[in-house]
Length: 109
Image (cartoon, rainbow, N blue to C red; front, side, top):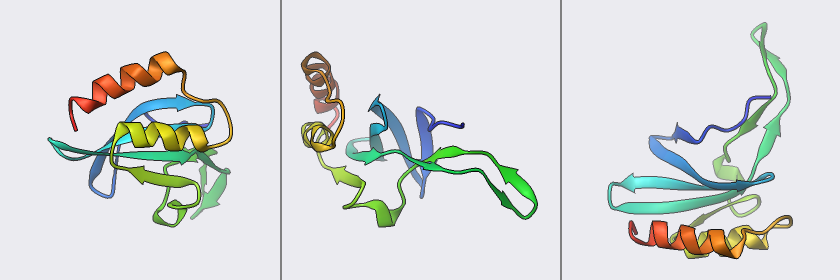
């Protein structure tokens, strides 16, 4: 299965993975060099399928617009993103990692 990359471009925006635990992720969206947003989401898996006679293998997908508010959320700060991430069922971000993430991304916001 093809997994989501650490860096990707979607709808003209650049994204970089901040953290992933299981099927939960936080990606940082770079709007401008000085403005960041954080996308928190549950990773979805697209099953293998044929399109125009060509096999597309099973792969993880970045959230679509329709996913926001259901399985994906946009947060203004890393603190809000961590809170949202930890509300989703499953493993939480360890406190030591939370502290490092806040220090790292608070300097950029």
